[in-house]
Length: 265
Image 1: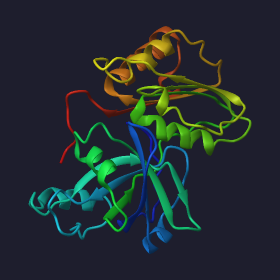
Image 2 (image 1 turned 90 degrees about the vertical axis):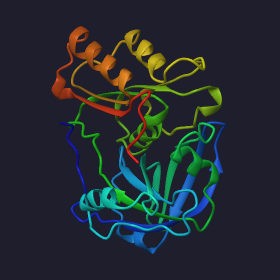
Image 3 (image 1 turned 30 degrees about the vertical axis):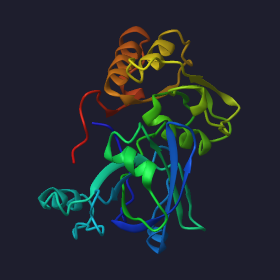
Image 4 (image 1 turned 180 degrees about the vertical axis):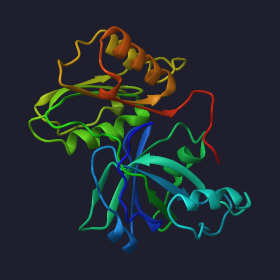
């Protein structure tokens, strides 16, 4: 089981959309905020949240009344006509002084609830968030290897921006095309490599996996964090453990999604 660090005071927090910015054809940034975010424990790294938002046709956001993980159990008992959508997103940035939180949303033509939210979010739209903590937990002094497809790129960018300035390592970041490359303030000792150019028929993550195969990984002590589509995660684990002799205990693997399988609604 993946190790995770979660705030002991987490609870469901109400918020609203403050603004939306289209970063590229494939990526939008949605900023949410509100008084409840005074209780959000910003942890940096790959911190992620469950985002609750209205389904199409719903006049208001109806939320579970239980707290913590109980809210997710109660959610499943709600009628689909009143149940909100819930999707998982990395916290791209959190500005405690302004009570603002940014998430980056993949907007693949409005083909999914999350994509439609990213395209259509407007100021004043009701949302709620449940903090799910962080999984990037490197030992002190370890070099890092970060591998991600589009879905995990926001997490890696946050990891790098909150990393100690003396961190050394390699980051392999796959995006759909060159327009999705973002500016990043990474520690100077981290070699950030953007990978793009996949065809419309290629599964995200395959280019990153091929790049990892051709990459000289940092020497020990090493901590690897791999996230994205299931095929990338499984392939990277096999490569690192079997061919590069990286101990399983030195790797965090996260399958964010699986091709052909939709998220639980």
